[in-house]
Length: 225
Figure 1 (cartoon, rainbow, N blue to C red):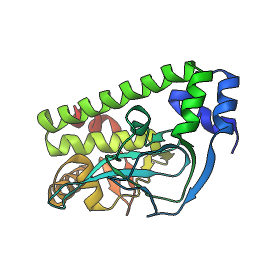
Figure 2 (figure 1 turned 180 degrees about the vertical axis):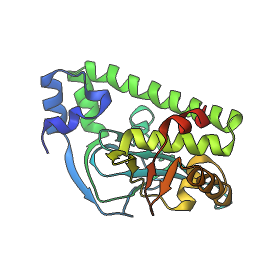
Figure 3 (figure 1 turned 90 degrees about the vertical axis):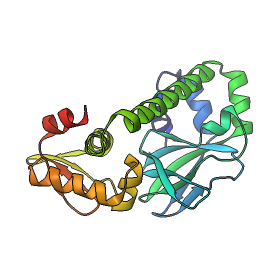
């Protein structure tokens, strides 16, 4: 993998060529299979990963054993960057949803890079702000949106990052089980399945295993508001 892979990560896109070259030189390539765990909640956080290809899910397990899916990340996105700001225990478990190729960077190498390339610090602060913004939006959705609205919004978000045009719509290979999709929107599987069945009956979507075809994006957008 070359330097272009690093530039696919939004927080690194504006770096100069010398910084990107130094960053790529400090990174190691990692390949994982579907279902393989990158790191577990509670483990020491000592590195971040840039996803070159594939998908990774972030999950959290409550003390009573219930699981919550926090995010689905894809090419160009970063996994585990919170450990850079506050080295300590991981706050989530990262698992590959599909065969994935990643670049990893450990904390000592990052600290050395920050000393020589201060522009990298500004980009990392931007990534922290983006993460906080996503968290605030997710909390607002839980308070103010009903389950069908959250399902519609989740499908649209997944389509923006993983969707591909097909005749009649946009195919979104999300690679999620029904239970994982329910965890992603913070609802029961039965309620989410009811919403999906309603969208399908209205002709807005077509279900296809661990994928969905969006047939009427404007109506889904109105439902997501």
